[in-house]
Image (cartoon, rainbow, N blue to C red):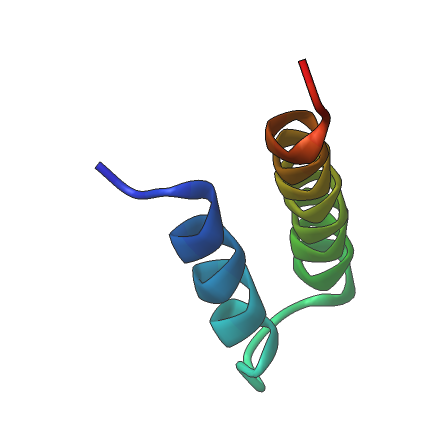
Amino acid sequence: MTTRHDHIQMLRAELTSFHLSRRERRQIERELKQACAQFAAERHDKTTPA
């Protein structure tokens, strides 16, 4: 099972590809932005005192 961190790393690696169309690049950038936001939210939830 891939973790959210792994998913973010894979998306970043995909963005380094020279063979992406503009549409593909925009889609990956959207996915990366969403994954980063979710990762940050999860980390915030874990650090919030109960």
